[in-house]
Amino acid sequence: MQPRIILDSKRFLLTLDRLCFQLIENHKDFNKTVLIGVQPRGIHLSDRLHARLQEVTQKSILYGIIDPTFYRDDYRTSEKQLIPKATTIKFSTANKTVVLIDDVLFSGRTIRSAMDALLDFGRPAKVELLVLVDRRFTRQLPIQPDYVGKIIDSLTSERVKVDWKHIDGTDRIWILPDKTSHP
Image (cartoon, rainbow, N blue to C red):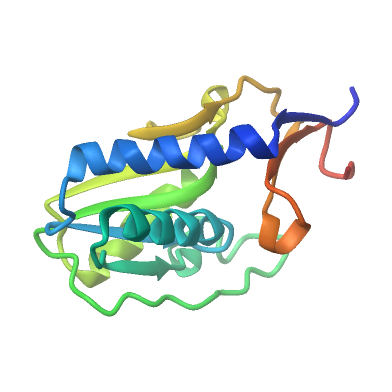
């Protein structure tokens, strides 16, 4: 199988806008809602969504970044060393609706870890999950997103790669045949 683009830059931007407007429809003024990007790759999406939401709503929306590395179930057993990134949450999540944001939902383990880490900042009233890509047939835990940019039915051996304009020069999503392939 050859690498293939499943979301080009034009559809990528439309998808980001659709996700923003779904959040606005459900959270109105964001007074009781906070956005939390999940390290390492979810922050590219959460940065973009946060900026766009503030632009559209003309409101200041609480935003933080969480690193679930120390909460992972494979932290001590992983073959490659897991290096934690920064967590920057400068507010309490107690009694707030938290929207966790990640790029690709695969097994569900990163999100489970992020929810565990989130409890260090207060007990949320509700936790929602927003992902750019849902690989729905690869779940190992019963975790489902509330907001989805694109659903992909792929093989476990395939890899989903998200390119970001500020890093890779263009916004797009690829499906690659295995971990060694790269467009």
